[in-house]
Length: 489
Image 1: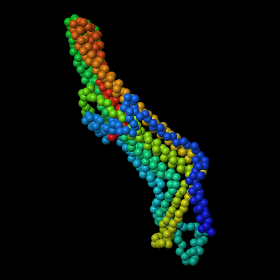
Image 2 (image 1 turned 90 degrees about the vertical axis):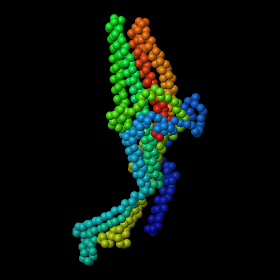
Image 3 (image 1 turned 45 degrees about the vertical axis):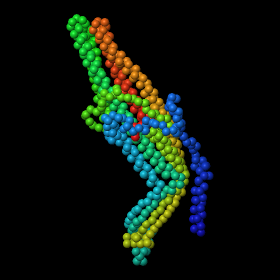
Image 4 (image 1 turned 180 degrees about the vertical axis):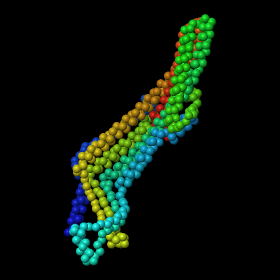
């Protein structure tokens, strides 16, 4: 009868679990929340501009993002700075530890759905009260000359296993793997930003060097003009006001030199900080090459290539996948959980009898439990996971839109900077000639000193603007390379 009763209980339990697959799960008890999964929208235009050659997203199309940064930047000094930064940059090294943490999270999640087995040793010694029921039994045993065991020795293994019926633990493990992939893409995105920031600061340093050279050249010219004006005053051909104005202009230019010198120091220190080095020596560079650098157009490809080239987009994509898996894992907490506990080993009151076959003990127990009292806490966790899943999908859409917008902005910026630079070159050429003309006219009293001062100042400002435009033009090329997804290969 007992056997039949046990079989009937097991049959009812198996039937209950079987019925959970579809009919019961459809009820509100196991699905009390009406969740609608947010799907990320990644519909991007087929091309960036209407002037692009019509291409299909599936076509092979050259893209500057596929170029390694070692080939993109030909300057050996810049390449050495980037190499140093990739080894020493503190922010990057800190992020690499996040990757290691994610790797260990995956290892921990993998072991969650495996049986947990432990080995234990135990010894026990006890004495009961003589006035207790057990004490009376001991006295009876003693009178019959039977041995009274008052100790126990145990050795054995135990196993606990939560059977992953609803893939709660496996989904959690897969979510950890997705987080690991997201962290790796985050590392690539950080490398891309680091490479572009170093290149940007390097070119800005070169521009400051050129500005300093322009200022030094203008200081020499202004010193000559100032001495010439003092000489004219000595011959009564100029007044003290003209001398003072020329001297004031010279002092103003010298003051600008100190400002630019400070900016150069700060820019060098910024590059050293990004490279993670303590070094008192100047940053090596060939600044005279800046104005002669060619800024060629980059192959931009098609917008859909951003999905595979931009690490931040791939990072957002893996985060979306992880959030979906985490939501599934949390939802499974509402379902009945099956756990199996098993113990086996040897137990005896005498160590000599411990490993005797008759000392073998074992027990197996299964539990099927569903949450009742703590359902509200689980529902709250499901709500949090659902909101996070929606948030990651929206973040993915925002990241994709931002990447697309960055490419458009940098494309337009390069085009406009090229036209502005060409126009500014013409302005500088005209002002060079104007300075010569102004000095000649002043020499023959055909122009006053104010015209000479204004022409010299306009020339200085135009030359500095020309350097800034060149720096922005070169920097825009770097920014477009990063926007397309380059710099981390």
